[in-house]
Image (cartoon, rainbow over all chains, first blue to last red):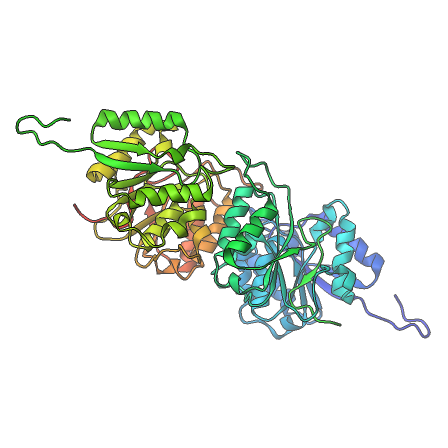
Length: 284
Length: 284
């Protein structure tokens, strides 16, 4: 978009994409670059680290950490968008949140699933994080909508991108249940006090969801939360034998046992409909 | 065995079997009863609760808790042997360890896998627990050896039953890694101070073992342990992509990162060779 006559020129927002967990597919990167270019309001800079591969990960811990630290420290980027989940950001999250460069503080950080380790660590040290779609989500059915929702939030704080139950000024935190339980008690555990905790899960058996809810709700730190809202729990494999209660009953049961209020549903999940949850949502 | 002449009559040890997790198979119960009868030194009393079925579990939480509390409170039993693992003892562990009846204190408690939740809770409140074979292990190849090993330990504190690296007077604790990480920070987390921590795992992907080791070694409570010894990690499914390091490298890596000493291997696992680990092994 060029400035012409009275039309104001607005520079596209410069957004860095890095992959702290698993390797981004080149097709996904290209498709999302094309969407951003067509929108005109976002300039994506896909860090070459996204395409590295080292065993399970998008490059060694050192390479992933270096790329992440680099874009955090770069004043030109107004946002850091995580390329995809998988597994591995926990291995660098504590280091990434140490000795923060000044430029890290003015940015937004967006991702979910395994990136929840970074959301936790960054929230803990005062950065502006949100749980929401990632670049690789373009590969999902209706993935384009997920990408627009993410960019709408990053670029212009579009309210329609948000999880509809959020209330401005009230803290909310969203996590994959497995990721959240895996960081309890570690150096990157954030402060849950008075926050609504939104949980989603994918491809875990009911007995495992029960075990995770036992663990989560048994944590004193988690018991400081205002309550739990349940996102989608999808692709749940068959339990053998039949478990005896469904995911919602499990979540409600552990809320009841622990005294943590069950506050209803949340419009988040491992899918293209996944809405954005800024941990500290403030009115514009 | 009857007393005859100078041969002293020794009454068989009365051992209660309950199933705080999943249902015991009747064939397994019969086979192990027959072994005990042939030995003559152990009288197994299989609580009928073992054969209940309620969804995933061997009866409702209330039924499992009641059976467990009943045998704990019964002075006639010198040991409580957990029938099998699966999932579910965490749902009753805290209640089982509350307001202990006096008779609970003189007994031994033996099990592993999901029963680790009870080992933790009971160790925390001063009971005499050991990690070792369960009744259902008779169904494994060489399961008879596992059953004899368990009974040898329960009845006559046979040293050959023990994990060979144990040192009398030094605390050791053995757990399934998944079970242990699932109780961190909960009300049943025991005191790991100065204990050797022996870990085993089955059927978890390498990326999950890595995530669990991150979680475990990130715990301040666990960092008080004397060190970690690695039991067998078996039936590990293929990681996609190839993870890039094997289970031992993963365990060593997280020990190194966290400063917890890696103390070598442990002869425990989800198999018939699983040796006994009393948490407080004292010389006879």
